[in-house]
Length: 267
Image (cartoon, rainbow, N blue to C red; front, top):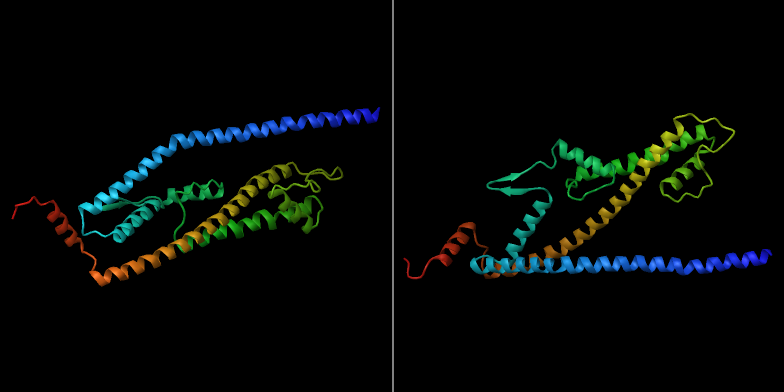
């Protein structure tokens, strides 16, 4: 009888597998359908914008023949970099305000909550060092090194056991061999589990922040390598251009543009 029940259970498990596989295929199909929809909707608009931008660039170079391609590329890259930093030209002045007190407070909130919108990031070396220090050193003390002392006092664990529980909990591994508030021989304070819940919430956010910081450092190192290659190529191009003629001044560009737009036969 037990054998028959075991065969029946095994048969039910066998029939569950196609259902799970069917759900997986439906999930993948849903993702592929969404990808195709966004590709069809956004792809043509992106290609049209790229073609329009390239056409505007060549029209500018055609109208102002004294401008050179590498010089224009450097100007465009400078404008893009300034725009990403929050600087925009408004007449003869630039707009500021990202790093006032309110903007700095917003950055602190987005960093602590690990939202990290990406539109605001420190650019100075001192600010990046401060961000790393707050994320690594302060978080390491608050979420990994100090909590084991609390667990040693309340739970009676050793420091190593408390550190092991802290790491396993924040990394979401959760083996279950160490769990707080489960010893029937101990009387726990009423605030204990609430405090640990808050610690878990902010500790997991801190760990996600550290992972995001590592990803950002890897991306920055990759950008530096690409920037170095690009600068070496531009330096070689500038050396070749210097052998031909010097770069035009702003006055020369104005004279050149007025000469190009001047009607024929005019003195």
